Amino acid sequence: MSSIAVSVLDLLPVRTGQTSAQALDAARSLARAAEEAGARRYWLAEHHNALSVASTSPAVAIAALAAVTSRIRLGSGGVMLPNHAPLAVAEQFALLEAAYPGRIDLGIGRAPGTDQVTAWALRAGVSDADVVQHFPEYVQQVMAFMSAEGAAVQIGAHQHEVLATPRAQAVPPVWLLGSSDYSARLAAQLGLPYVFAHHFSGRGTAQALELYRGGFAGPGGPETFLTVNAVVADTSEEARRLALPFQHMMASLQVPGPMSRRPLMTVEEAQAEPLPLPRAAFDAVRSSWLVGTVDEVAEGMQRLASDFDVPEVMVQPVAGAYAAEPLDRDVHRERTVVELATRLAA
Image 1: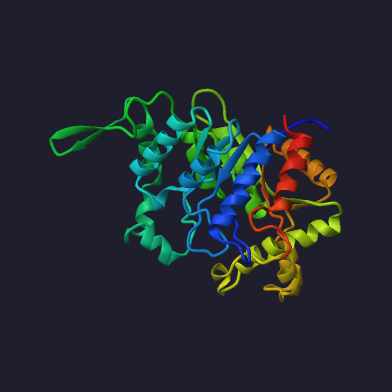
Image 2: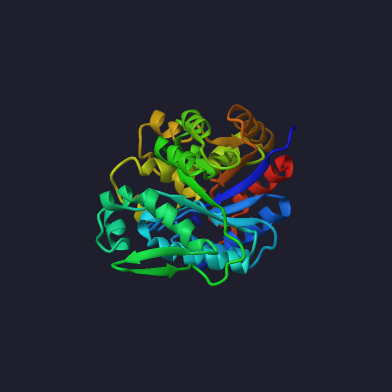
């Protein structure tokens, strides 16, 4: 079995009975296990106002996980830039790079990562159309502010120097993330590394990567990898059971309802819960997921890496938990990451 780099994508899921503190403890345990198994990076997504997800602030979570690890790269997957002032993002990640040099990635996305009301509150009433329109400019501002030279800002007749941090020694790499052609084209235009959200639906990946690679205009060459949802267990049947809580969560996003207002279900709750979609549509939610034994999932990851010509696959471990299992660890998510990284990591 040929080697590929294995990385981790985390939403800091919060299941029934868990507190935010316990979910963060579980992430610390997962990050340490991923590092020990040889995973390359560990990225935190940004989501807001959901009882099932605690990753509201990637920068804060990155600092917490970097403090309990020593080698693995920590990053955002991603910071949803329309929710933040570019200078604030630049300051956060410049300081993270100073604290943990050579270990920080800044992944940037364009989606809100939340509902419209929460997005409005995050943006202090600024319209979605306005921030999306200026997204390319904001990305470039983040990079300029983080640079050692900073950025020159013209206000009236006066020019002001703006630095994200004094005397920066290095700058974290900026990655663009996306689930459409837009970010692929922008990453190519700006010469930035790029990740397509293959774990969303498994569709459109080939077209996005072709646009990115074909239009790349930066120094060096294009750099990219894939994301995928995965669950590993002793048997395929058990892996499918463990996938049920996340499958319910993702399926419920397709129908009106209060799914965001409840924690991630336990496996027992998911087994007893009525399906939120017709059976065929519910099963289609995980049609692009890799769910099975370690051999089955590892082979699937290798096929993805070969089909899309990438050296790295980032796994979102979508394994749920049983009610009796520890609240400060996600044992099946850890197993998924450790077994895949051990089997495949370059």
